[in-house]
Amino acid sequence: MHLEYQAGDMIMVDFAGRKQHYVNTSTGEQISCHVFLLYCPSVDLFFAWQFGHSGPQILSPV
Image 1: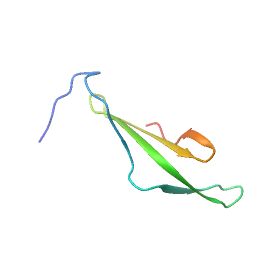
Image 2: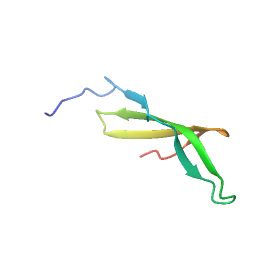
Image 3: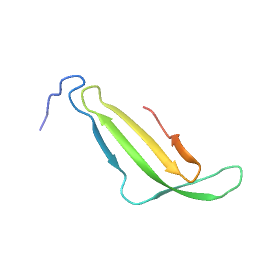
Image 4: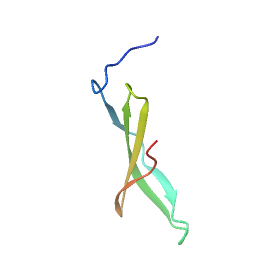
């Protein structure tokens, strides 16, 4: 089913379930974090933001 969205009409947000992990390449430490996801359907834009022990950091703006 295809849905049409007006620009700026809707933004979908969510946290990505369980905690995720990433590895600090300089220390080898495995760090757990929550991942916040944002999706804007009118322009097909995804955004991910991780919240770890070092504070929020942008993971991958697309």
